[in-house]
Length: 105
Image (cartoon, rainbow, N blue to C red):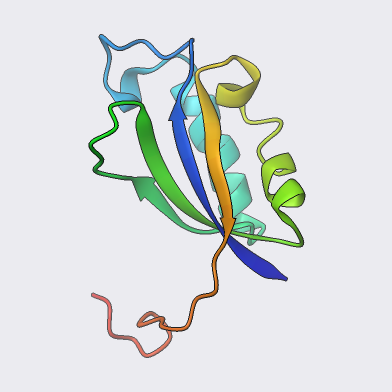
């Protein structure tokens, strides 16, 4: 199985007056994301600093193809309700991983 770098971005339903945890359906989105972590689809993920005000997060996703990586998020409440979108899905060959060596705190 391959790993993909998946970037998310704000969609039309994003409320710019609210922070990420105050967006509509945040709890449902978080529960969905947790289920992807538990099933081994999401390896790592979190908000990303960016010069692009619409960019939200970067995720390392395990899937068979870019299409499968996208499909894994199809039922995410934030996707379903147009709060965010997947802006980019790229194959990511990870050569270095300090987590395996116990180097991360």
